[in-house]
Every structure is written in C-alpha cells, then in structure tokens.
View (cartoon, protein in one colour):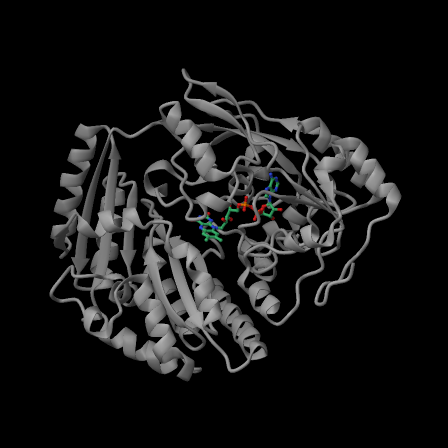
Length: 513
Ligand SMILES: Cc1cc2nc3c(=O)[nH]c(=O)nc-3n(C[C@H](O)[C@H](O)[C@H](O)COP(=O)(O)OP(=O)(O)OC[C@H]3O[C@@H](n4cnc5c(N)ncnc54)[C@H](O)[C@@H]3O)c2cc1C
C-alpha cells in the first residue's frame, strides 16, 4: 500500500521469515501504518515537516522482542546481513534519535518491561529497558521505594531511553541524573554478544564501562536492562516559593543553597519573562498578567492566538518583554525524612531571604507540583495555531552561567520568543532550559526559521563555553556540534564506534559518530 508523503522501503520475504522465526509473527510488523508511526520521535523539525505533508522514511520492520536471547539473535541476524538497527524505547526523544535514516529494523523494547530483581538490603533494582516510566515508578512505590527520576515525559518515555540519553528528572537536584543512579548495565553489543557489568557500589577496574553505554543513544549497543539505586518513598514533603527582584539574585541563592549541601528535590528559578507568564497572584511587584489575561499556560495560548499571528519578527516583543519583566520566581520542594526536610526548608528560607528573595509561602510550589506534567502535553495546540515550540537545554559552571544565558538569549531572540528556567542545579553549576516559540508566513518559512534559530543558539552556546545538552542528548539535531564540544575526544568516540560496530549497523547517523 502506498501513502502520500511516505517513502516506503519494502522488506524481502526472506528477511520477514527469518525475523518472524526469532520473535514470532505476532511480534513484528511491516504494516505501513505501523511503520509510519515509528518513522519519527518528537523532534520539532519533523513535526513541521509532517505539517508540510512529509514523514521521514520509516524503518522496514518493527520488532517487539520479549527476551534478551531474542534481542541477541536479532542483532546477530542484522549484523550478518548489514541491516541497520534502531533501538527504541518510547520515541519521546526530541532530537531525531529514532529516525531510521538508512532504513532497517526498529527494535521496540516495550515488551521487556519487568523489574527483574529488587535487592532490598542494597536498595538496588534490576529493571528491563522497556519499562514505561510512570508504570515503573508506581510499581516501585508499591514496594515502598522511589527511583527519584521524574522527567516531564514520564508517561511516554522508557527506562532504557532514560539511560540511553543520560536523562534528567524534575527532582534531579536531590536524586541526581540517571547516570548517578545506574550501578550496572546489560547491553547487547553490535555483534550480538551480551555484556553485563557488575552491580557494585564503586570500582577501580579501569575506565567505567557503564559510562560508555550511558548516553550512547543506541549507537554502541542495545541496553536491555540496568541496575539502579532506590530511595525510600519520602515520608514528608514541604513547599516554598520566593520572588527575587532580579535573575542574578535568584541564581546566587541557588548557588549558595547547592554549595551549602542542601538537597532540595525541586529547585526551579524562572527568568523574568517566564516569571511574567507563569506567575499568578503571587507578588505585588510582579507585572500584571491578570489584566492581560496572561496567567498560566492557557493564558499563553490565548495570548498567542490573539497577538502572535501578526508578529513574524520576534525582536520587538522580546525586547519589550525583556525590558518590562524584572523579577524572578523560584520554587523549592524538599522531601525525605521529616526532620531533615524541615531543617533544609528552614536553611533554604534563610539563604533565599539573605539573597533578597521575598517569601511567597508554599502556594507557587504546590501549584507547580499539581500541574508538573501538564505543560509538556499542551504543545500540539500551539502547532495548530501556526507556531512551533521547542526547548534548548544547556549547562555550564556558575562562573559562566549568566554569560551563557545572555549570549544564548540574544541569539535566540532574533528568531523566536524566548523564556528560560534553571532547574537542574549542582554545587559547580547549573543547566539553562530555554523554551521558545516562533512562527513564519509559510511552513517553509517556519522550517527555515527553525534551522537558523538552532544554528545561532548552539553556535552561541559553543562560543560561550556551554555544553550542547544537559539531558535531551544529541540525536541528529545537535550532531554537527559534537566535534566542537568534544574536541580531541571526538576521534576517540569515532574510533570506539568503529571498533565496537565495524559495519555501522547500530543507529547509523546519530550523535555525529
Ligand atoms: C513532553 C516531553 C517532555 C520531556 N521531558 C524530559 C525531561 O524532563 N527530562 C529528560 O531527560 N528528557 C525529557 N524529554 C526527552 C525524552 O523524553 C528523553 O530523552 C527520554 O529519555 C527518551 O526516552 P524514550 O524511551 O522515549 O527514548 P527514545 O526516544 O525511544 O530513544 C531515544 C534515543 O535512545 C535510544 N534508545 C532508546 N532505548 C534504548 C535502549 N534500550 N538501548 C539503546 N538505545 C536506546 C534511541 O535509539 C534514541 O537514539 C521530554 C520529551 C517530551 C516529548
């Protein structure tokens, strides 16, 4: 069956039969509708192209293995025939990581979703890669634990995808990023062999093999399981909001909190423009969102519908918003043992007040907690209105943070409305998460704007000494900047890829290696 806008590469009967022998006929598909649904992830560029009537060419087969042995046999089969393999968790990636650039077989791991082992004494769990985030967290909660990893995509991303992209959850300041949680990995290598590292607290047996595969985005092997640390389900949770007269004071407060060994589960500082849009009845000094009908996400959509269709050049609105909005809102959430939580909360309040913050009480943080996943799932409305939205997440050390922020803000402002928040903080530095919205007179125009925007943004990031990605990874989107960031290490990564995957079958074309 042909479908307009889809370039279909068929698969021979022999290949179909051999793969069916490995996984069973009910666990593979070459149905064009199924294949089309596997042709892309949530990369915004591909959403714009889809609006233009084009989907990337899909894989030739989609397979749902149920065991490690099946994955090994699939990989051996593909390696023997030089067929590309694309590992897939839930396709919530935002950088094009699951696009079958050279056709081949997409291996969807969702049927491998068990918690294999829960070691209560060591507080470790061995989990299969295909477990979907929210389901996994709920299962762990029933056992009295939390994994502490809560990406905004928790309902639509997989455990293996988190490990493969070095993801971060909303509570990372307390629980760490996924790489801080993993103590061992199980990987099917591109020749079909199985590598299992040992679950140990620490070791000194050469460079860490775990860290070769964490963040490798399917280019070096298929992660079939990993062992991660668990935490007791928190007994107490406390909420706090602050408003700072400016961004600098808010950032200083975060730095001081992180450097005095506080571990807030959530620490989010909104830049003045984001504060302008997201504040609701919290402070007299704030701009007047109510008058403009701008409160919350719905307010943003209403605002977009009314005003933005007439603005294809965002320079002016950005300048207006950046000059009007001054204050920066912070939300803090502490969780864990009640006494420690109360002590951390007290200490954080003291630091924030000393840094010029005005106490907003608990409401802003409670409100954020209640709606913490909502914003991510309302974006399609904005596309329907004729805009595109995207996010750019970078990181740097404290000494360079404001430089990176202002450099990138200036670069993006030429192309899109831009706001940012700071939500993954460390004693040494912090990430910046830019949210952008732009339009164009035609879809072609939108695509051109999209490309120039990313180019200018990442060029500015590289020039200002930031890291290309704090947690979304590289995929296709950021591949061409890898060399600039990794410098001398890039040939090393390429050599590693050649050694592990000599025929280049594992997720070809990704990460610039
Ligand atoms: C609404 C929304 C909110 C988001 N919020 C966050 C957030 O808060 N934090 C965050 O970190 N990210 C976030 N993301 C990005 C995305 O959810 C993460 O990158 C996530 O880790 C991807 O998981 P996945 O299972 O969907 O992976 P996929 O998109 O299926 O794959 C991502 C990459 O990893 C590879 N891969 C997947 N599984 C495996 C495996 N088992 N073995 C080897 N390679 C594999 C793929 O080939 C691909 O290159 C968000 C995305 C959306 C759409």
